[in-house]
Length: 237
Ligand SMILES: Nc1ncnc2c1ncn2[C@@H]1O[C@H](COP(=O)(O)OP(=O)(O)O)[C@@H](O)[C@H]1O
Ligand SMILES: [Mg+2]
Image: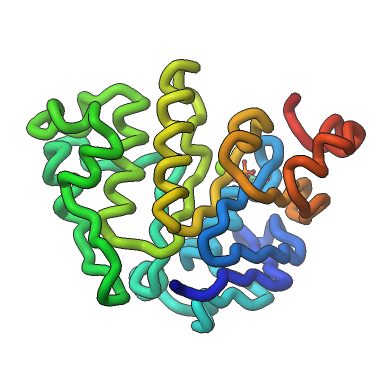
């Protein structure tokens, strides 16, 4: 099993615009943690900073004992972190199968069960009959499953999911919720961003509420239930 993800005092900017003001967070091995908060508070920027896609201006990010600060995104991916971005970014002209195969990267540790096409199709059965279809023709839900599947083909030990259920029909949200719970039960660590408390409560062990580029609450979701003023202030409920 790998070590934790630790983000300490993370500051990030877009040009001269300061958007993250000292984010601190930890994801322990095997944990499923949620970054909760309304639109525009800094959830995506936090994930993009962890992946090295937005430079961290200050602070420290370590994963599995390795300092990620200043590393390029492909090196960060090689340290065991997979990313399913909110924009999905699957290849529209490639088949479902090719979208998955292009992302194959062997597991870091020997003895871990590697992800294969069969294993992806077992988790997301809807993709199997579509495997020869072009990615661009999939529905939103199918594209989201393909995005998660593609990240898994890299055999990450930590998976970052940016608003995985956003914009999907309620029935698809239910399906994906069950699939993410199933994924969590494989022992992988998960950090996901979400605006809505109900999905987060079903899958996450712990949450960080972000607002204005700062962490405003850090704790178990059950504890949040007893704090209606925090929910009202920082979340869509
Ligand atoms: N590429 C960008 N250039 C400039 N500002 C950006 C860019 N992306 C996001 N921002 C700004 O940074 C802040 C945080 O955005 P983001 O991390 O995307 O929030 P969230 O994911 O929580 O909705 C917002 O004020 C947003 O307008
Ligand atoms: Mg976002």
